Length: 421
Image 1 (cartoon, rainbow, N blue to C red):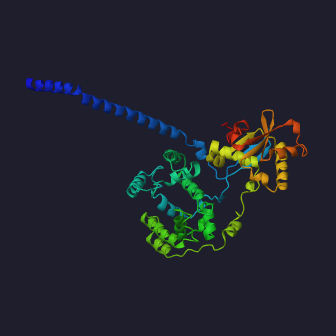
Image 2 (image 1 turned 30 degrees about the horizontal axis):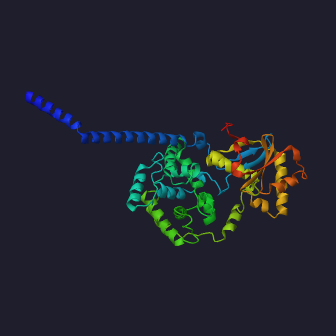
């Protein structure tokens, strides 16, 4: 027993001597420094991720999503000025009016475990990471249907780690707030199908001359095959390529037990009949031959306000929830200024409007902006003002670059809850 104690004492002495050598001190300090840096980086990363998680849209934006939300703009007296809606070729339909064949084809191809996961499919994500590393390029994303809805509706399409982290937290939150049926309904109505088309109803009418609830298994796989790259898989240019991918979609539907062998055999041999008229005629028949009526002759100031609101509050609040915007503008004065610019524009054959994306003419009353026009020829416009009924001495005319306009002094923005932002 005494020998064991003696050996331990000798070992401790050796360790003490070793710790006092220069090399050992250097190694110890290096490891300590590395651990401290690791703790700092880890803490910073956790705080950064936590911050991004808080930047996702609030619950009300998610639950109250509306495909036809309107942002309304009023003047300083509460008179209606104009409205803003997202300009899309889209016909929204409820999930009950979409063929099961389309739903099954989408799920089999995009997210086979959609009805089992809670927003993130970790298995598919890991498989995507392995494939990308093996091939040394981005060949698949591993995103679930929920993640794609989060990106398409609430986030941007930028390929950054910041957007991906937000997408992760937003998808998890959506799954707690929305039923699966609502999520896939949003996906099928918001996904792009080429030619500026959004949603399966318009895609079915445009390509097949059918409603979405009339599409069979073969056609559902055909439409789904286009989604990989609608610009490339254009049925009027790449029909053979689409049919090859359609066969892959049908195989996936069979593999995941979404169709029977008999349904597969029937679908694989069934031809696809496309609409053959010109795209503009299809849009005319569908009722989408020209832009939304609110966009036919949009006032200059409305476009400027829309750009500011989009940049400041984001797409989801502007287009999917709707804002109420009270301005310092005066309805009567704004209409008169618009008339002046239109009249001068006719004389100058459009020279004023061609410059309208850079220069703004502001009519100020004291410290309040009462009207906004788009023109480079401010001196020419002010020369017409008195003659056309605006009291010249009552207002100060100011030419500004659009980017220099202080919008927060002109706009007071509320959500539909009348909640000041």
